[in-house]
Image (cartoon, rainbow over all chains, first blue to last red; front, side, top):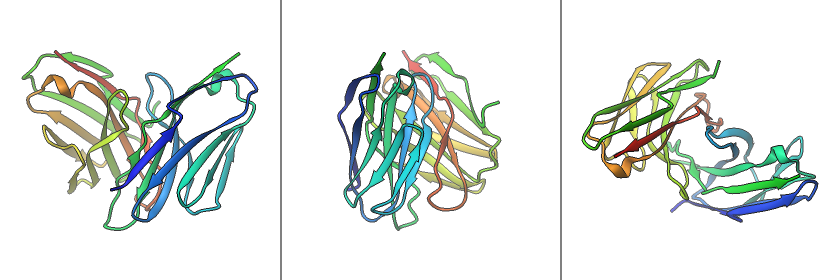
Length: 112
Length: 113
């Protein structure tokens, strides 16, 4: 069964304190791994897609990396506006599957 | 204007009522999806559609039905609402090409009393 586990469930950082969020997955062949940001009262906002182990993507203070078993979202020198829930999802390969399997998310709070 | 628009944004109704949630998009995407989000759980797929003539069940379709009225419109119906269908509902769209990200609306908060 395809599964995604995100850790920690919640993370509190001080402004400027860098850290990483983890997304571990088991999937029957990976077509793509997606990171989203979700603010309260809003839908998930797309951040990154990673397709193969060793791939990295960056956007402002965020950097996503991928191995064969997990992905990390590194946050460098975070600001309060980075506070949100970060969701990881995998798209299995094969069988015509278009389903995304989502993790439960990591709620990040950045204090000024 | 939002690319993916959901209406209503909030709805409170009673057990047994029929409810329709609507989604429209201006992204020109062929694929549309309905998800449900519950506190402490990941997003779960209810139904998805690759085009107007193609509708597929997701992992939690029981108690729900959908209609793809046009390429840009995808509605979700609860024929007889029950309290455990209280949740956040999201519509999403994606491009026809495989492995393209899904883009989400801002959701409908549905409460069933």
